[in-house]
Amino acid sequence: MVPMTRTLHVSRDLYANGQRFLAGGVSSDARRTAGVPLYVDRAQGARLWDVDGNSYVDYVLGQGPALLGHCPAPVVAAIADQAARGMVYSAQHAAEVRVAERICAMVPSAERVRFNTVGSEAVHGALRLARGYTGRSKILKFEGHYHGWLDPVLYSVHPAVDAAGPAQAPVAVPGTAGQQPGHSDDLIVCPWNDLETLTGLMARHAGQIAAVIAEPVLCNTGAISPDPGYLEAVRRLCDEHGTLLIFDEIITGFRLAPGGAQERFGITPDLSVFGKAMAGGMQVSALVGRAAVMDHISTGKVAHAGTFNSQPVGIAAAEATLRILDERREEVYGTLYERGEELMEGLRAAAAKTGVPMLVDGPGPVFQTYFTDAPAVRDYRDFAATDRAKMARLQAALLDRGVNMVPRGLWFMSTAHTTADVDATVDAFAGALRDL
Image: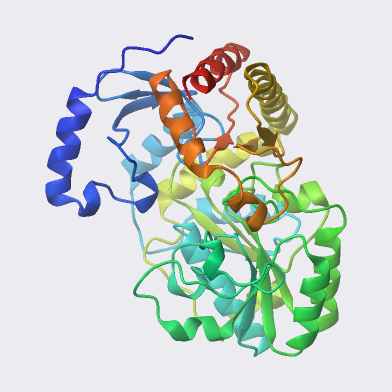
């Protein structure tokens, strides 16, 4: 695939005008770029078209939600039908009960469900519930793991290494100006995939830790799988210390398996949070967990509220999406893993042919490309040692060749991606590497 003639006249005008009215010209920090942001006009299947008419094979997929591709017909029909019947009720409705029942059938940790709108809200609810249930205040999180942009957890996501402390004893580094410094007092930061350090921290803070929260596959920093036996050990330590285990499955949920990463790895947490892929692109998230813990919400001991919780249009999208993922699971997940493997192998071969040191790693339905000659990336410090600036330049070069991926090197697959898409992407990837 040769570089396309990508005109950006309309996009440049929009960006210039947007900077007058939108802070930074965008609505999320994740959309900031060195040049003109991508202004999308429409999306269908595995493709995007921007406002200038340029077409892209899309591996961002809205940062993961479009697991079935953009605008899958059953989800669009469900949204349109519900929108015509009501968009907000501030009351209960039948679909939320059906969706909650299906989630409880699909997800190993789900005995009760509460809906939210976005992942950050669901995480906030999970941490509050863990503290309310245990009567403890401290939370242990892992360096490089992202659990939303709210103050209590926006620490040590992608910190400068020289400010982050020793690798085996990371310090809590705030993610932004304006965070209340006191939040870090109740936060313990641990390196990922380091059982010895985790065991020591759990012992040192025995009787104080309400919950350990983790992305079971670290997707916000590469696509880093747990070492064999690691999640089993985390589960065992939590049980020994009376600490709840929370899986942040906002990305991995319904993407790696119908029951998320917890199904794939056979580890059942006490609480889990889901979002992104569960509603095919609509903004729905969920907090789920063991009945004994979740019933602290039921009794009113722990508060949980929200005007748009179980918003009917979003729930309609979730119902249509989860029905497909559940009832057609072999077809859906067979396609996701097969296409993901095809693309990963193609990218590895392209990098090898051009002599570029590159690691391509991850489960398949989501994976990461790293500029590194290291054989593996196991934690945040390994990720930080890769050439992230070069990866951002690769993303820009791929856009010029009609391929859209997450700038830090993350790729999301959908059931709409075809073998032809994979072949075109590998061709574009090889050309982009040569450009660099």
